[in-house]
Every structure is written in structure tokens, then in C-alpha cells.
Length: 164
Image 1: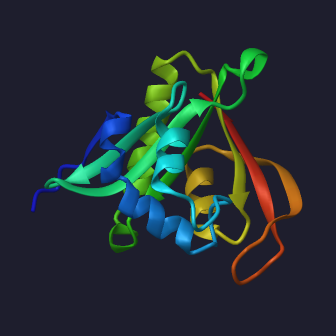
Image 2: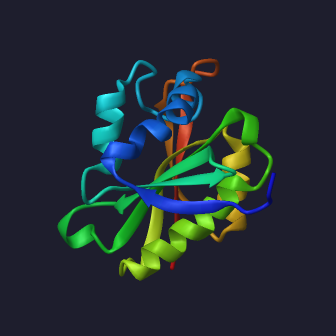
């Protein structure tokens, strides 16, 4: 096994490579608002239809994570990027999300975005909150009870933002 993590963009026809991670993450009902029974086709459409872009992180041909990058809003809000990250349960704690965050910020800068915003960070996902704060994101809003957490329902969601 090498230490090299490759992160690169994939098209809709390659989304099946990210699907096992995507499916396992949303099945938990604890970090994403996607319905736990979301279909492969719907996930592929949301994550790969322009202006959305999908990236995977892999090591030794094994997909360890994926992320989505897109404008946060259309039109007059399109200068702010939005992103979402998923890491394989078996690869957590290895810095994959951190490397994908760094990669996504660079991709966002190259695409002309001037800031990045996460609209819906579940407050009980303290690992993610700490990680995004480490990368310069600040909690700029809190939506009370916005997430129907599988165990702690209802749970607050944070809006996190940083300039690029």
C-alpha cells in the first residue's frame, strides 16, 4: 500500500465508484439530510449534473471518499461554492476528509468562487464541525431542530462559511 492519495473529478458514468460510500453514509441518518433510501440514479443526478461536480479520493485503486462541489446558489449567489464530503467508514480517521476539503477549496478558487459555505452541518457531527473550523470555516448560523437525526431527533444544523 502506498501513502499517495489521488483526488480527481469523475463523470456521471463513473458515479457507481462513489456509490458504496454514499449509500453507507446516508444510511446512518446522522450526518446528511438525504433520505436513507435515496436511489443511485437520484444521487448520481444530484452530484454529477452540472453545475455540480463530483470528485473521488482513492489510494491503491480503492475509493476512500468522495465530495461534491457546486455553486451554493444560482445567479447572484453563484460566487459562493458549496461542498459536501463523504468518507468510507473503514477510512475514517486517516485525514481523507481534510485532504478533500483542501482539494475542494483549491478547485473552488480555480473555478472563480470567492467563498465557500456549508448550509447544513449537523451539530452533533462534532468531528466534522471541528475539521471545518480547522480549515477556517466559522459557524455563521444555527437552524434549531432542522435535522431529524436517527438517534437525537430533532437536532440543530449549522451554516458554516469561509472566504477563499
